[in-house]
Image (cartoon, rainbow, N blue to C red; front, side, top):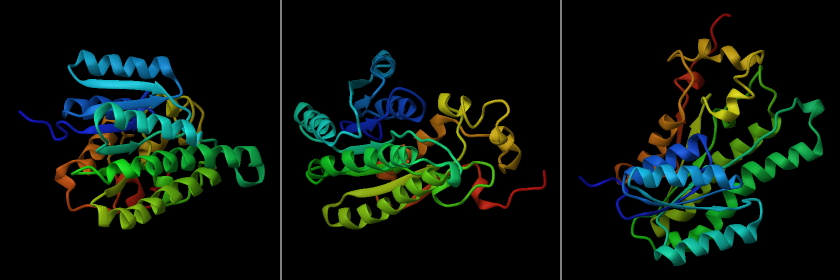
Amino acid sequence: MTGRLDGRVVLVTGTAGGQGREAALLFAREGAVVVGCDLDGPASDDTTAAVRAAGGAMTSSVVDLTDEDAVRAWVDAAADAHGGIDVLHANAGATRFAPLEELTAEDWHFVLRNELDVVLFPVKHAWRHLRRSARPAVVLVGSTAGVSGSMTNHRVAHTVTKGGVIALTRQLAAEGAPHGIRVNCVSPGMVDTPATRSDLLAPGHPMRAIATSIPLGRVGRPEEVAACALFLVSDDASYVTGANLLVDGGWSAVLPGVA
């Protein structure tokens, strides 16, 4: 049986855990050669080991995605090692939450760097390699935060950056179309990851009980987001570009119920 990504070289950022790890595992199962990166080298190496133990192909590197020169070197090394790049999944990101009046300049710029720069730089430097691919595709990671505000989570900077990622998706789709590069976005709602368990889903946080406001009655799992990313980069989505796929259990489709 052939996989949906057989023989394709796929870059995945943020492979140390959560959605990036699940994407690496899933893409490799579908036949991709995965090239991952993360600031957390040991955890990303664990992902690589899991991929290889399952019979897949993956390498990973420690890369600071806010450093454009480091990103360029990582992308070009992957292209040189594998004869090109076919897919980019720009998954990595880090954020800080604060209400408007408590938001510091340092926090604002941290979020801009770690949710916009870390997306732009990999796309920018993978672009010329993607143009040479027969079936190039990019999937970015937005958020429901990019399409709506929140009365329980003070996230001014995060809202701005995720809205920016969704807007960037549409612009890249326009610029990529003449070259056959499809660019789409997955926008998760609340997903159970190590990061959210220590923050938004932690005991005592106002978002802890968010599942009661989600139509499907639960928070999402990282593998469910990865499955949507796989669809968007595969030939199953060959006529899809510029789309923002909300993966949120219907959360953004309804008004919240009465507590």
